[in-house]
Image 1 (spheres, rainbow, N blue to C red):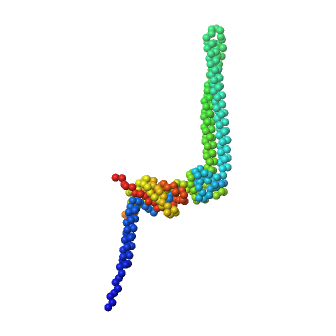
Image 2: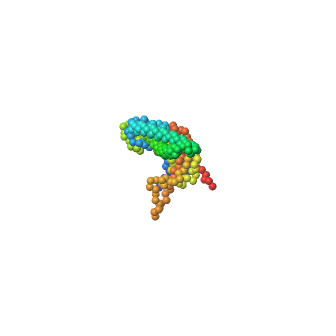
Image 3: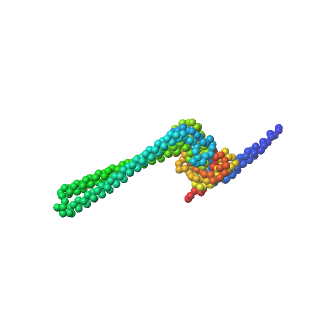
Length: 332
């Protein structure tokens, strides 16, 4: 009777070697990464500004194209300025007219004040004449002359009172005219401001995106014309709350970008958001129920690039990245 062939141990040896290699690789990976916190729930972030007009108007010129880089203050769109130019010219004419009215009122006030001085001098003269009549021998003047001197004083006093009241009225007129002139100047400033709104400029340096406006479009105030993606970019990494123990502002980090394989960018932690992402969501979770299930929350961490090489690549908000933060020892 033949002896059955002996089964080979080679498959078990190979399997053991594979499992041992996996274990060794896992242990090495743990040793290399135990001082770091990584997450694949991260993306490049940046300021995105919607460019919209502050007044309604017809677009006469669009000076930029999609994906074009612009500088802060650069003109993006021109609106038809004719209506605003007419309004400014009218406001300037009204301001000139009100200023002229103010000049007339001031001149009238000056004339009234001069008349007060004349009336005051006439009253003083009449009082002096009356006093001279009183000081001479009563037999040297007639009663009629003394009565005439008294009447002259009263007449001069009445004229003085009338001109003083006229001065008060002129001062009030000057005040009203000055207020009208000031209001007209404000109207000029407002008209000039409205005219400036026909010139739509970039609030910051960045790249034009999502351009939807074309010459000839009639746009309303607040209508989005394009988006401006700012030059300043950073990484928003959503770390698990269990990973935050060693993450501190200022901690060094590295970032790899899926769009730029093989390049490791230097960075550092800028800040940790005070609140989980779920708290600031449109519909925050309501946990006041009888069927509560604990879910590990994620907290956004802002990571800022320290590497000037980011300028050499197209890195835009929304791109996937893999950050790795060097964990810091917790404070005692």
